[in-house]
Every structure is written in C-alpha cells, then in structure tokens.
Length: 310
Image 1 (tube, rainbow, N blue to C red):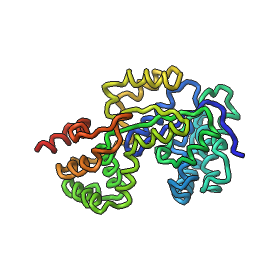
Image 2: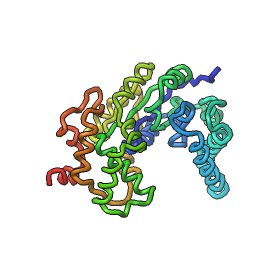
Image 3: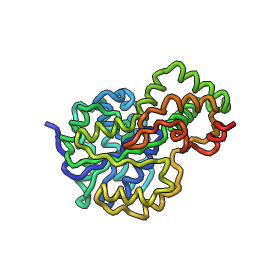
Image 4: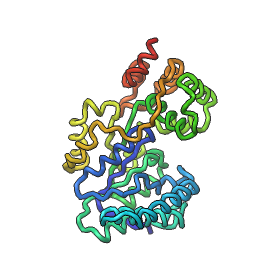
C-alpha cells in the first residue's frame, strides 16, 4: 500500500517555457511550507511513462556528483540541509529510476523528520500536466488534500520560447532570425515529435479538466496578463490556497526575468502565421477558448506583432 501524505500539498504544474519556474518560486511564498529543493522532482511523470527513467537516472547522477562536491565546500546549516534533501532524492532515483519501488512520500521524509513547523508541502514539475488519469488517481488517493497551480501562456509565444530554448541547447542559435524561422517552419511541416510535444504542452484546458475530474482543484495563472493583474492574481491565489502569501518573496519575484535564453530571435511573419493557424483552436484562456486569430496574437511581444504588420 502506498504511503499517504496527509499535510496540505500544492503541486506546481504547467508546460516548459510557460512560467512554470515562476510558479515554483511562488510556492516559496507560502508560510511554513516545505518546497522540495529539486525544482522538478519528476516522480509521477517518470512512473507513468510520460518521461523516460533513463533520462531521470542520467540527470540525477550528474546532479548528485555536483551536490556531493558542494557539501564538502560550502558551509551553513541551511545549505547543507537543502543539499542533503537533494542528495537523498537523487540517490533513491538512481537506485529506482522507474519510481515503482519507493513511495512519493519518501522524498519528504528527511525534511519532516527534522522540522515540526511544516504546514504545507510543495513540489513543482511542469510535465505533471500531462499525467494520465491513472497517475492522477494515485495522487488523489495518496495525497488526498492536494491542489495544483497551473501556469498558462499564449501558445504561440510559448512555442517560440521553447524553440529558442531548443536552439540554445542544440547549438544552432547563431543562425539568425530568418534561418531560425525557416528551421521552425520545416519542423512544423514535418510535424515531428518535438512539435507534437509542444501541442500537448499547449493543451491547458484539457489538463484542467482531467485534474478536476480526479478531484484535484486547479488555480490557473495567466502568465501573459500577470504584469498588469499581479495584485488581483495573488489575492485570488491566496483565497484558493487559504493562506496569506509572504510579501517579501512576492516583492523579490515582481518584474524578475527567470530562465531567459540569452540570444535575439524575431520570428518571421510566415512562422507566426503558421503558429496562429495551428493553435487558434487550442485551449488557452481558461475556461474559455480563444478562437479569433486576432485574440490569439494579442499578447505577443510588441516586436513580433510589428513583424506581422509588416
């Protein structure tokens, strides 16, 4: 039988390049919360086949080596506790990368054994928005008092951001905007595995529906509108979580750019047109759908809209 977690639990979910890192930082504003120090734990998505166990094992081995080195170099109790919790989780993942032979609760035992002031547990893994119904049923059974915070971003802008991230990590970022746009168009025309993955990551409404069907309430943060509606969003989030957020953490996050890719890319009009056509019927503005092309493109960066008007 799976070990249950009885404390209130908050999951941060949402696709890569859609503000999921912002959400993971936001969880730290919950008073008396223990946020797992691995920003992406990848337990349930690995266990249920959304992510490969080999990817988890390889990543954890590299991080484990770095953290062990850090533990011999840095001083301070708080840092050592954080690194210890990371090492404990990485070691378990390396020995059980399928996540089928140890309970999810294992990853929170170390913190709970030394702290008696924890009122909430939190973890953020973007890919959890893709979890199958069986995984969501396990979550609800083993963590009955859980909720999720979903980061949502304009699907065209999110695709472009994900493509920039891919270009930076695959070393073709220096090709220039026109060549990069053509590369992205070719990928769209081929409809390759990476593009299909982006389609799944843009299905926000589908994710909300499945989570709530499993009995897991979801709060949606519209990243594109956050700057102009921050106070309203945070007030609604406090009502949803039934907590008062720490303003110090919020102030540090306000206006901060997180995980920016450091190279310029202005997508061509042709690329933006193709993306708008592809995603104009896909769920974005929860619970409504954006259908008109003009509405879909409204929240794009100014320079991209200028390219469309050219």
